[in-house]
Length: 227
Image 1 (cartoon, rainbow, N blue to C red):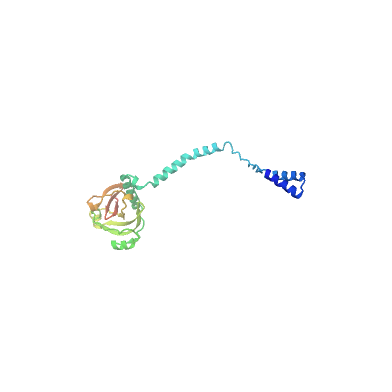
Image 2 (cartoon, rainbow, N blue to C red; image 1 turned 45 degrees about the vertical axis):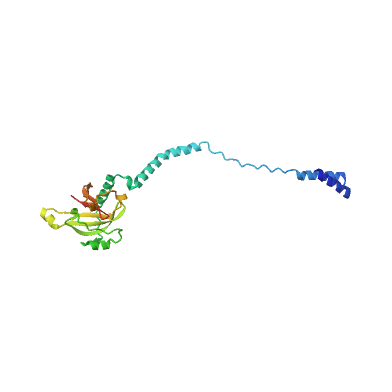
């Protein structure tokens, strides 16, 4: 400020400014150098929440919590990996599924006594239906086949009928049997007797029917009969 005043005095001496004009200039300079304070922003009013809203939210959460837990438990049960089921449970599921299909037979999609002809029709499968010399399949004649599934895996349903001579000899009307074949998936189907290793099929009862289960050549076999 002293430097400015000295410069002004020199200007007075040179230009002949009066003391009054000098005082006015100094006042203007002081005002210009005074820091300007920023205006205080006006805060927007904060909305006041409803006093009972948090409690209402908690009451709603407590009310729906049991329903959410039941839903989660149900989804876990339905989507549980097959490996978490016991061996007996998986076998029972397979037996129940094929027995149900046997009780509600759908029309054959291909009628043929020749397995090669049935194979040509079921060409969308990711395996080749096999001919087996298992004792349980002895004296059974092929009638035809259709697409189906076992535990979500695409499968073939082969319709079999015993020789008519057996029924005539026993005086009984021997009924149709169904043979299901699917590509063997150990994680989905679980451990099954392997006929290639000399293991005998496992026998189960499901829906009043007899179900034989085994694996042969990497293919699951499930034979359902009325006896």
